[in-house]
Image 1 (cartoon, rainbow, N blue to C red):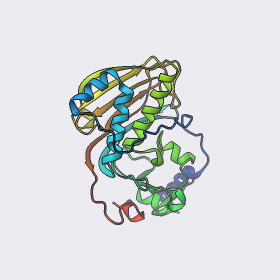
Image 2 (cartoon, helix red, strand yellow; image 1 turned 90 degrees about the vertical axis):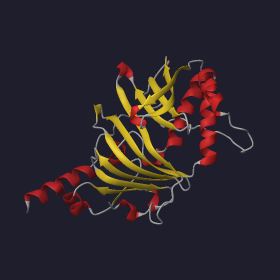
Image 3 (spheres, one colour; image 1 turned 180 degrees about the horizontal axis):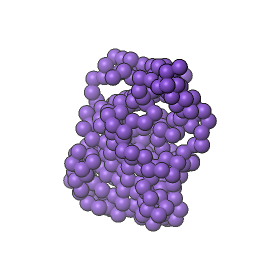
Image 4 (spheres, helix red, strand yellow; image 1 turned 120 degrees about the vertical axis):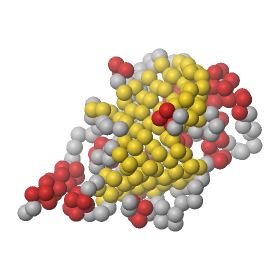
Length: 275
């Protein structure tokens, strides 16, 4: 048997075998921002006052605006995560996202590990993630497209959050939920950092926040958090998560965001996984 093909088969078998799951984390608490569409959003010049005096109210208004205006987007998504105790290489991904049904399509531009493309559409494909294995030899063995359960070891080893948990609004809802819980317990300590140009978010000017003083790490193991909201769009475009010992757990940035694009008819299908 060709040695390269044999190696590819071994790698494919290894990827499908049971493995130790990555850093364990409980599901983050859920948050909901009710909105009947009648409540006026703050004027742009009011947002900095809210950011300084009422960070939870600021977050809620950011989410309300998103829910009213955003149906989907295309962007460059950059992430770096610690998995199984090891800090992984930086990944840069071209991402497409649709709100209804929740749909996320990734094409890796750099830093790809197990797959060079991945797709999840809520309620379709047996509610599983589809992935295009990285490399021609891997695809020759595993097939052009493979299915994975969202809670499988493979899926969890690909990132701290699954494609079902991906999204700008999802990030903001996770932030809001943990801040609300901390406020309820009297342990919310959030410093407004002012307006900051965030290089990784495309040099956009952003409202910056730094949460410290955790009584204990939150459901994601986070004990230090910085988040950045685009001044113009109010979107959460940056998050830096740290754990015990100031150890980086993950950092996530959205840039080159195109809101409400016209998606191709087959964008969120198997055909969308092709280069």
